[in-house]
Length: 314
Image (cartoon, rainbow, N blue to C red; front, side, top):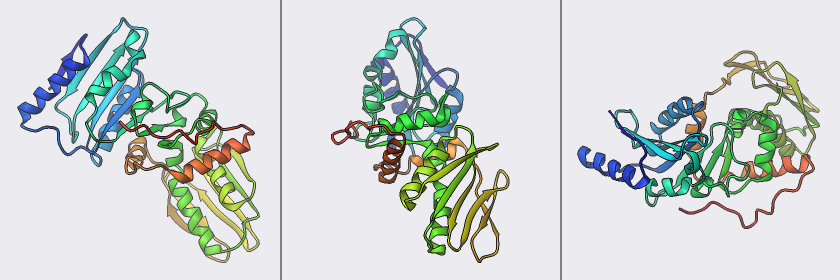
């Protein structure tokens, strides 16, 4: 069953939600945060399913915000009551000038005294912290791979980075970073040069290269390949080359100087898994902040003075 509400208000949606809880005999307890997904009609369904998948591990009130600025002014809402979600699922369609005032719609629906997370699955605002929706959140998640120009999008994220911001392009590098860190611990040799190979305009590759450069103190070259995604990382040491080369969608070859070649699992994860991983932490990602600062330096830009910028407490 879905409770449909046309040309409604935030107060009416809140009242309907409370009535639904009363019918079920609960108060919507057990949730760990409010999860806002800011999307549009074209990308709504994939984002909706990813939010539901993440909800299995992270019970939350999910607010799917569909923005339709070209439609007549108004607000439509649907409360989804027959989902597998461990919490509330509310789809809010903001039309016309309502798009310009999302806070007045969303604030009454935030779960009191719990963190707020906002996720932009595709194009995101330039400055997340000052965005009308972003300013409501403790954590703000973007995905540069959903942007028209992923590499430029991650550079923009670096320039405007604030405490609480992250991007799924960084999450996509988690396993690569773990394997490379393990390799460096074993080789115990200075790295003299490094390369990352990836598809054209690949934001995770740019982040991985910046992370390696920051950690190793060497220039890292990004080499374009047919992809998909990151296909290899190579570290040159006096003892030989450390290589992690993806040979298929799930298999990867791991080569270390003086050791036999071995295979490791390094599959490309879907968005459901990535967003689930990111929701496991509500603290600031200090390493990402350092990597993004390094990207700003490499691009010859000056980052904003973020010394007084931080996550907003709701």
